[in-house]
Length: 227
View 1 (spheres, rainbow, N blue to C red):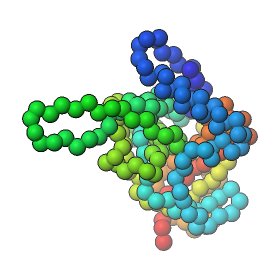
View 2 (spheres, rainbow, N blue to C red; view 1 turned 180 degrees about the vertical axis):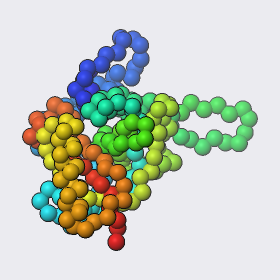
View 3 (cartoon, helix red, strand yellow; view 1 turned 90 degrees about the vertical axis):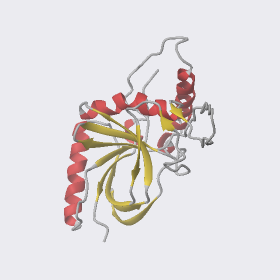
View 4 (cartoon, helix red, strand yellow; view 1 turned 135 degrees about the horizontal axis):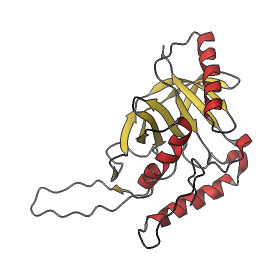
């Protein structure tokens, strides 16, 4: 099976678990989506935003609060997505416990069924003190209280507050060199526009790796002061 973030192959032992069937169904769906070419990212939910200003490949956007499922990996930049993928994809494919109210009686028994969560875009990656935090943005229909609880302790749910970000969009491969080059361009544009940086960069990817490099949508976002 192919990791949609890194293109790596990973395997499951037959009869070991029913989870691979959920993986296969979602990966097949992604395969159908990608046949659309340049429109391959428009068939999954994406966080809504308002454009405050823009010029060429640069924009300033306002995002409402979102919720992400996140995991932290201690790897080099280009390996972080691949290592984080199985944890996060497992969570949205059913490695979770549905929340439910439990009555105050005795005895209480409960079997909360796993919940599948729709795939969204983008997949985000940011630097932390202990490595790289990779996250899937959760569908807007969920709240922190209604999302199922991860069964993997290395996956956490986090609320990202409403924010204003400066963004550069670019196509092409997912190399660290291209990321650093476009990050520098974004920082230069932020300085030209007299914007005040208020956070660390976030790298956003909207497509699976089998999307042709020239059709990929990549973005770098830096939080800036909201006047």
